[in-house]
Image (cartoon, rainbow over all chains, first blue to last red):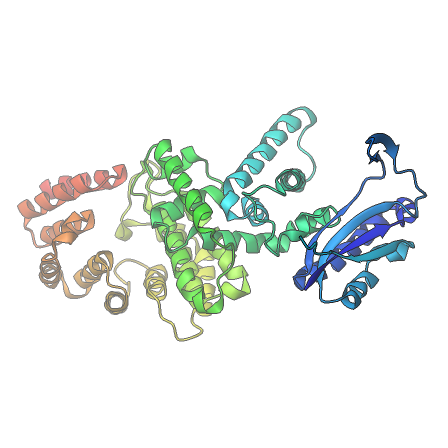
Length: 115
Length: 404
């Protein structure tokens, strides 16, 4: 069974506009989705990310504030899970609550590095 | 609260759970002093404890002392689900189950009964170390050591925090009932204290047993029987001591002061204990207590039935105390001579000589047979063996009565 990283983008704008009640209902959906994965023993870990950040880039190690991207492209969080195949990982992603807020889920398999 | 937190942090981190509770109460004292007590104090306390628990989880997610890989706890590690999971864990219906789990964890077979009760008083009844020390007439140091050892045991053995499965349930419940029973006995007839009756211990024991009865999986006949037994005894507790704290013996007790409400609920529990075919010592002891409760006075007590029940009890759960009590019933049914014969036979087992009750009973019988000198000696030996002030006072009175 391989590991997959699901990268969440966007969806922030809608989340921010919500009333506290709706926000709670939305978090309840995350709870359900991840709870299901937990029940199946597939959940490894997940965290949301703060909007602000820093960038360290290149051989010169330039430090800058950032990443100033459009909200839609900004990575907002991740989830690491077990899945048998890309098909299954995609299936898992279909249930991700961020899609309801018009976000995207990028599904990537963790690669084993041959030494 | 300690129970819920122990579920969250794992039994190996019982200490952290206790710290969080203590900090919560300290916060409460400080804040309430200035702002007054909030409308719903317990909700306030739960909320503060919950937030503190969230902090602990955040701080210790990657600590080796916490096992968050446990499937139940993995949702606590993600910020997406941390607060929702925490809310769910504090749900009131679950809290009761947590207390049960705690009870079973405290009564693990490899923990000595003394330590079991100490831990129960600390984690479930909220007794302070000093209060526990007072209960057992030991030093706070000893109690702390006992608690420390038990917590170490949890940590090393990675004790699971669960309600036992069906196969184990009876055995494990037996240990829990035993602890509750001892706790109740200590309250009902305190061996270590200046007061004969410790109402607080009686209440706690009954509360714990009620918890068992409120959960479907632990509604066992023996639990009902123990509850009935405690009701019958507790109903009579007020009439057992005078206003000045002296013992009043059964024949002299004012039966109108008995709590008939408690007797009635004892009765109900007794009926519920009757399902299934299990007859435990609790069933028999409850039946005996019931006979005492329904007797209009001492003389009209159905001693024959009580003697029968004691015969039965000695068969399924032989114990020195049961044997001695059988002799008490025998004394009423067949008279002093028969009782003395039986008691002398029992006395061949020298272990019995360590019980104050043995000597005091022998003294009673000798007094009835007008063997005044022997009776006096018996009472004096009994006095040396009793640690309780009221008991010694009662024996002293008996000696006085003899001499007059």
